[in-house]
Length: 468
Image 1 (tube, rainbow, N blue to C red):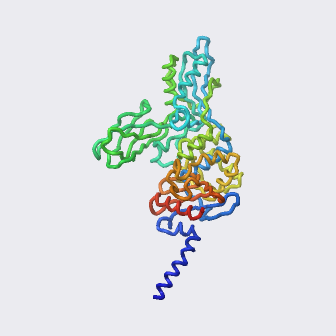
Image 2: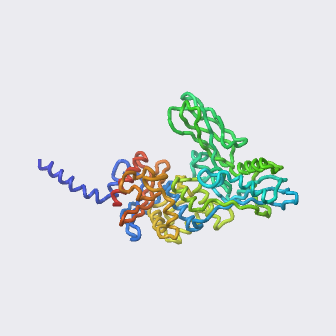
Image 3: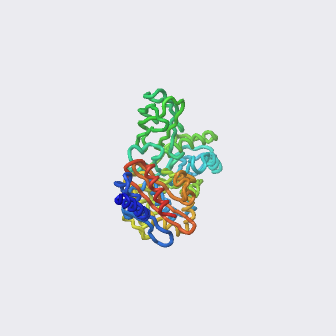
């Protein structure tokens, strides 16, 4: 009897010990015991670390890496920066309105051209008007897409093969159009049968599919497109729901500049402006040209809000690659990483804890420490662009990718953060603003022994125990 009473009082005594060690409580369970974890929670303005665990340990950040991309872009480009796309001629217009030469679309990586997220989807109407105002009545040449400000890599080589060709892994080019996405509509039959392709929107001449898709009992999209950049051939694997008269799946446009040139040609012809040659694209800028119109994207502050609230990979990759143009004449991923690491090293952040290969966090070989991420968040809190950065983040329990995070808890509406999710990775990083206590936090979990939803629950419990 005495031994039972002793065990009871020991258990009671251990409760405050567990409560006073939230990190130990967080990691000492079957879900996270063997996971690769990095945690940093700090109070703003005091430089006081509230909780940490392997804070200098780089782990895969998934989409929290977008915080690095967007913060760097704000600091180096400013919130009012706009991408430019110019319409250019390589010969003067004759008195009768004939352009004896080509009309070029010269891009600089604007991800919003024709985008369903931002910008004007009917912008070609305005472009036609500008051609008319320039006095051009006919073009004795072609509409040529010039995407040479970006390299021809398109899709990051560190991405997984299953991501390439799919809507969330669309390539980043000097000219991008319609979010670089097409929609393929299927009609599915009985379980086990192959769905029939009904139509492709927009239509891309010469595009081919090898259809290995199956109809199944699932209720969601589990179709995957496989294909390389610039290739008009895709193989389709996976499943979609059976017995659907219409089911739509999105894939990436492999040559968006060429598609834009083709559709611009159609718009000009419809307006009565003759174009003698077929639309094409160039790999070399070999002539002096005259700019007749400059198209501007929305401001960077709006673009980064789309990136962080909706976790838009496509926008993130374009902003990321553009950063290399601050040093180089052609945008490359390698050049962008160099710009980013140089900037944050100059701000005394531990860039030896940053292994960055893309701007979106889609690659599983990216790695960064929670200490670096928390340091970046602290820096941005003091930045002259702090307000633009903070409003670009979704609010917990409210919107974007945080709509369900911390819902119906004391931290709902008081947390602005970025989530990150790829296979076997769950991360959150951001700010918590309470009445008299303000925090920055970065929590990264790689390889939990269970579901990512269970890992999210543990992160919520940890933040509620620490930030109060």
